Length: 192
Image (cartoon, rainbow, N blue to C red; front, side, top):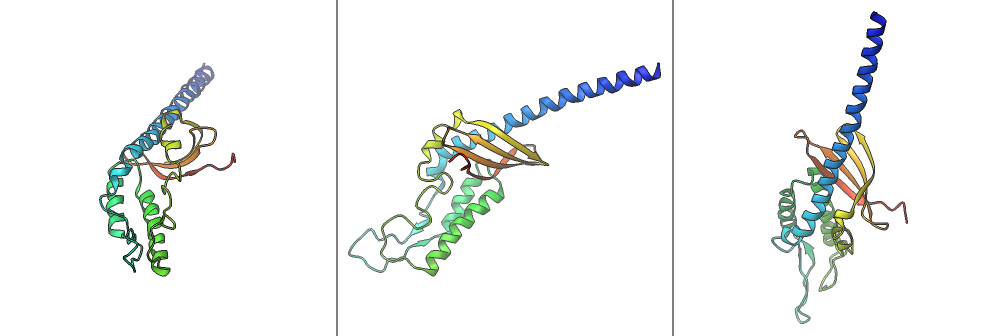
């Protein structure tokens, strides 16, 4: 009798724990997708408003004026990042990496000055997050699907397919309040 009770108890426990484990990942995956799509929509709508003052200074728009030196205003970059932080979609490591990109361009322009220039800024020729055609991603955020997802502790590595040619990798962290924030994003170039 004790054996039967023990076997029934073990079977019941394994069946119930199996149900709870399959329901949880779908809920988490849904929360992650909401974060990714929400970020893409937020960025599309708010990106033009993030910059309150010119990040790049020293454009020579006047062909008569000479000796204009191109530079990145890091104070403006910090304002931009502060506005970006308000989205609540990205982590401090995401913002730190973005600041590092601007700082690298700034350091390069300091070391190798560009004088009397009116073209695209070397290193900042396109959208730093989404490249030369951000609308190819941002206009189709709702069509995106999570094709692969891997978890380790409070981190998730997500392959997010927007189209056959626009596939991205997102690294996210679940914060203490159970909200997912984006640490990094990049293109998945394995299909090219």
